[in-house]
Length: 344
Image (cartoon, rainbow, N blue to C red; front, side):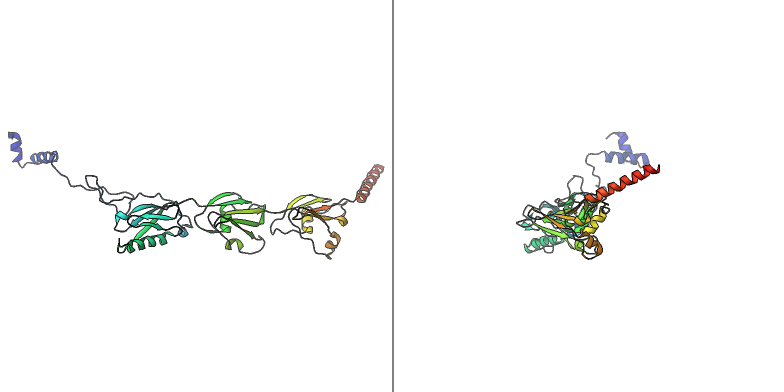
């Protein structure tokens, strides 16, 4: 040993003590106590601190899921093929794993095999897995927790007279009025008929809903739409008013969807002076494709003797023009022009 180092080792001065501390820290065989760094953000309760060798004391470390809004129908969500679940069993990290539901609605659990959890909620599936672990004598009283990491896309197609037609994502069944609201609501051309096509079962079936916006009924809120259904809001029927009316054209059967002859003529701003109201006709296309013509007793309807005729979609009200009234009107016009000339 060198004399200078030997003298320092037996010295009690502060300089000597500092030199000895630096020498001990630089020695290869020196060991420092490992203190794990604090975790930021938190993970599963099964995580453990890592030692200096980098070996984790726990077998599984679960990733953090990003913060996201939970849909309102998430509590009633039914598990289906394609879902990815994360399973955690309290105080049993070897059973903390990820499960993918296969096409048959089953998941595979180590030492148990396949368990069918399709069409179950998270709570029901957790209870079923815990029961299987207990029945197979793997764990005495397992505390199983399931969480959805990925869920298969489930949609409802909304077509027809809605403001934003297309596919609406839906996890669980909803009421019909909620589905229509998710599609932006009805347009001003919507009628009173909504068709719901169900894909479930061997053969698809359809339900036709009739409702009225003028009456206080709850048929929309009482009708249930399920994922996979197709909702079509039908367009309101059109009635055509032609001939001797102020504004001929086609008119939508809006609101209730019911329209009679007097209401249709009122929408057309009434009849004109040369109109032959006594020869007014209703032209209707029958189911077999034939056309039927019916006289409209307009004068009796206006006197209250006959109830107005109710119209159907695609009906045509034709108001003929009276030639006699046209000639008389032309004569009156010519007489007025002549009188104006004489007056001048």
